[in-house]
Length: 496
Image (cartoon, rainbow, N blue to C red):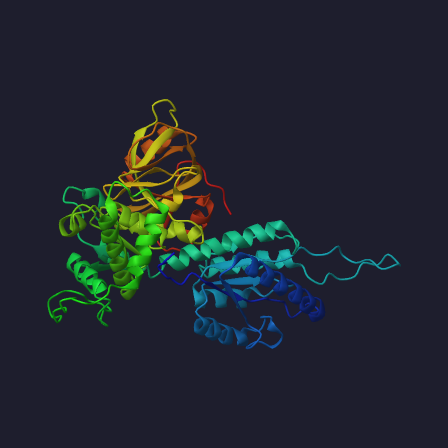
């Protein structure tokens, strides 16, 4: 499948630490075991690059304050996304806190359990070589003094599944934070006039979070489509407005971009397109490729699209299934120009480490028989890969017409009132319910009335972003690192 390419690798700084007043030999031996264990976990999780400090710190363990600058310079050069501080004995809280404060990325604090204190044959008990847990209490307090948020995995044996699970969850947190910071969202067209609910504060998103909204005019999409028909590249500056651009050649005798035929083939092999015909599929393929190209040249992680107007007016087709296809290809695409929904979708896909597409739905009606279920629906923009097993996805009027798979679901809404930003993140599961048109899933929770009132009192709206899987606690943990974003939920969400 033709994919929208983004950098999804987590670069992880590895900083084993020790206390100089403890014997070095046991810490050195433990450090080698610990680093090997993290290398194995990184390989099993995939898309992880470990950066050790061996090249800048003698012995590869940090304890001397004079080495902090070297580690900071290394990590900045390598553009690390998060740092792990495994304690190989008591550790040194000052070097941890100073390094973490300088880098400003998510921090993982962990250390292995101590062996039993050794007793010789005479019954004499010798000094302990590690006291790892004790040192981490000191480090955690130092991190708080420096206002450094951190994630902690309980003191456990290096081969414990607790470490595997905690490390995997921390990688998901780091993935969310990486996706959030410096996010760029392409805005294609304006919001529907009456949709006051999707108004945003563009300046505030930039000043508070570094999130940039990139205007992409519908005219740029049109011109890009025409370039694709002629297999012409985008302008180097990334602007395709007709003004100031030379007129395009007639196109006579020119072959289209070869991706178009591939996209058409992929769609026609995967869905029932019999009611729309080949010409409509080809129009959708051109729109997909054009939006992906414009998003790529503008370095966007998602787009928010005026789905009511421009594609219908310019090409005679709704853009619903085009948005579904963009999700499937790795580019979250919010309908009705809902920027905040696009942010939520980006965070969800990052939490899932891009294993599955997100979707954006209306919260519509209560289940006619189950008081704790609700219809998550939209007119046709859910990725075809999410279709319920055993069903061939149908596309009618260029809109997806299929129920998606059930199972565990995480639902979020990123929104704000008066500059107070919230991330509602909670979970439920798909359940059985009546058939309807468009794309949908019946969403079951413990107490729907609590959800309804939470959404009603806000600062939320009828749009939510969803994804298959259980990621509420990952998103709650990520809020530590996102800046002025408060986590919110309906039910109590477990701590990591």
